Image 1 (cartoon, rainbow over the protein chains, first blue to last red):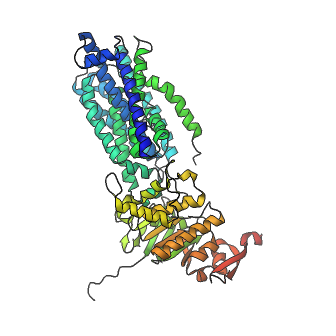
Image 2: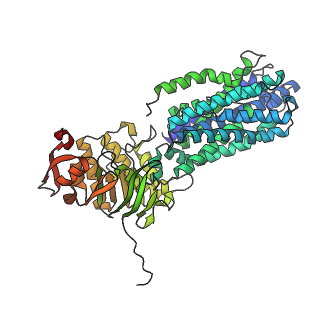
Image 3: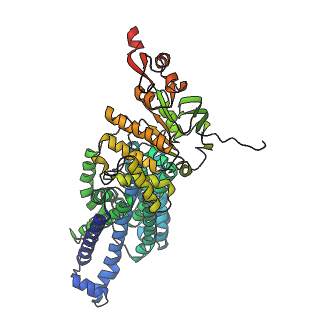
Length: 338
Length: 272
């Protein structure tokens, strides 16, 4: 991969992202033309337009961008650390672990009335989600550890843990009343419904910081992908590096889940598409995957909002429609594992 | 003289016990690998030669005993510092697809770098030198997938060279290669040993190649060392009978004055 073709890919992806975002801005109950968006942005729109743009669509699209970036980078890290292209926070059960803890937390703090949720929970939620994600990660790691780490065993354990956690969330849901039951579905299926600026304020700094750390550690991710013995030979403390990077991946996925619920397959598809575009070196791959993840989530959210409007689909379901066949395709073309 | 400490050169292995959680492969092993020489470890499958190499490379942690590299305990010093003294080439090494030869070779600078790991002028010189010695200069922009088996292995050896270490450990560097490529790789390693004074330790299966290129051979069986020394002392009928359960005829190569086997047969098959 030459720097030049990387730059061309970057420009292409950024243009695509701008296009999808503009489209997402303009579509909705109140349709806005690109010109109207521009006008409203510089403060010359109608009150209704301002409401649609600043209060509803802008924070929602920003959250979509952040969630897409976080899930994609989380998947990129996990695929390299686990050394398997099928690894990603959704499939490994990290998202559902985070979602489960959030649901339990809401249940315990609010009795069974979801709508009485106080504002401070928005700030505590990422931490609750993080502990849930970490519990999932430790569980998978512990169960899969047998005289060292085998990537296929880890993946299968993750799939099992994911099913278990998702079932537990459904059991929890049954304890909520009817109205909240539907609202809690968001955590299992993923949704950006009802996101506001406060979510952006909580998620943005954490996600941006974690992605920056990941980009800084690119060369470690490169070397881990070359196998344990090569990595050790080059002076990497493999176990320590793995755990540190898994923690970052879990944190990214957990923060994303705490604002958007469980969204699978972004972490799977984004790194894979990006590897095809720019190769496997992380100094290029991480940023590319981030952009691809943003495009995927913004596009999926747009479809979720508008396809059957006024009924809104779950964004997780929309992504799964593309994600599931993609997963099967990757599994079929994987090399044999002993 | 008071307070004088003797720094032992080379790799010194003391009372080493190593293996997997419930399966100890090597017990109480003692051996010294000389510095500046080519040492080859031989043995049948499951003899513990790979376990020994992996423990020296610190992929496996010893259960007991220690391994000293020019006096430094490899399992106590930071992995990064050891990586400046000893490079490791695993069997069948793998790299991300799409990587070019030059990009791969540059990873050899890893232990010498901090932060983003950007290479400076002196790093570039080291990469250049390594490509040159391994004859990979013209192929620097090729991706690894587009190399022959021998070229592929030469690219990896160039990477280990970039680490600028005194010691290079190689686990079966000639496996999967045909005869011509085996010779190509071993000749390159001999050149590195002679021209650059690198100490080379490797596991090899091909005994005649081992005999021809090694200064020192360690023969292992069931986790123990049954023979060690220069090829003339190790490649003997009795040793091969003990190590591999084969009956072999040993001759001396006029050209190299090294022993080689001519024909052999399996003892267990002959007796049945």
